[in-house]
Image (cartoon, rainbow, N blue to C red; front, side, top):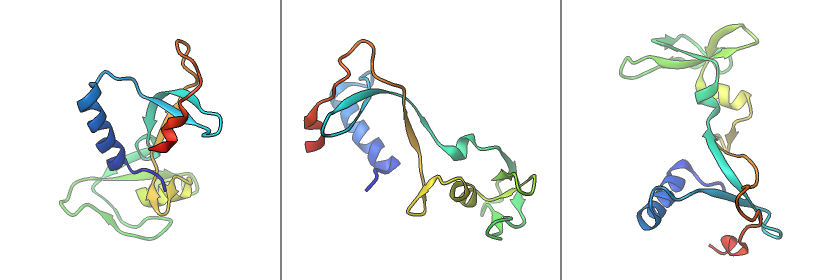
Length: 129
């Protein structure tokens, strides 16, 4: 099961309280031969997608849903290369580009390689938690 944004934030808030907010974050992978990498940034396709804000989207060109904000605020609509228009809802944008897991949007933690100033090998104890 993948961790959610709320679970990650909750865990990091606890760590910040005990170790401080200037503590570095690393990522580990390969439990049988642990390696660590630097975390470069967090990326969301919906934040980076070619989109516009509109008062409403009459109908999504993929699912046909009527996209409106209940408070009358603008909604984010995404560019659809098939129609060459901004006529796709956020949910379909994420599904069409393969950025969903179990129907939920996915956020990526982007790794930027082994740390140059540290040993690249991780701690096997990390998988015991």
